[in-house]
Image (cartoon, rainbow, N blue to C red; front, side, top):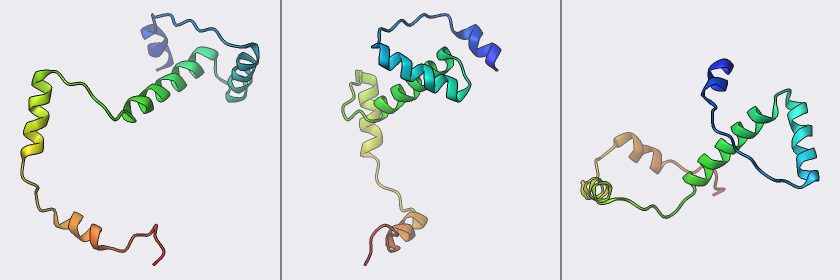
Length: 95
């Protein structure tokens, strides 16, 4: 798998950083026993996915917007299991 991942990585990403930030990253890389590229790419892609998931505004083209509107116009389905779950006391609230 590592060989396949290295083969797919053809794009170069260059960043500038403060010396103390680089030292911190280098120490974490050493602690994890990985290399700089693997550590940076893994953590950067995780951060990118989280950032996209946290977005509250999305821009859709016309076809995508119509598909979204179609889904939102559907009547709600009765899901007995979900109804039962929502009637249980919350484990997160002291009553």
